[in-house]
Image 1 (cartoon, rainbow, N blue to C red):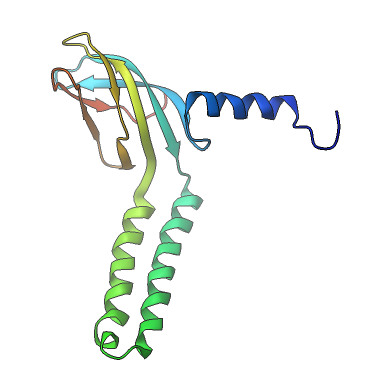
Image 2 (cartoon, rainbow, N blue to C red):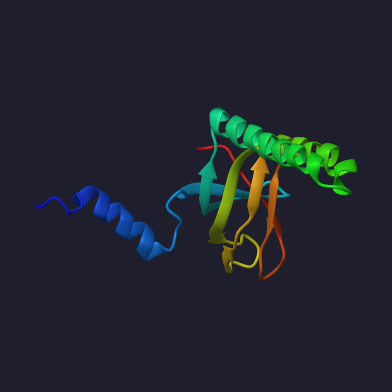
Length: 151
């Protein structure tokens, strides 16, 4: 093995992500979808989970960035009346939301309990810790909740 070779363990991990089309930071987790009447269906979901430190850093960085740009607009004639206070307020709201996001869900795959169709639901979005993520079957539009807790 020469100095430019990649160790076999890293090469197989990288090729697995490239071959499947899954972004490197996402993991595929076994999940469950729950219908309104309480039935559970097994599913696979691409998920990125954020820890407490990552959420605080991302939210705080957003607040800091918007505040810094707002302070820089003080010297710009005309906009110095609005943006120095508006941008930090927008940053606070956006930072609070980003700080609450505990996971992002990519593609969800499973079988619909009503019509038995194979479901592939594209990017589903960000989920805060106290929010439910509801998805619909593309074939019959049955609403199902993605269960966020790890089994």
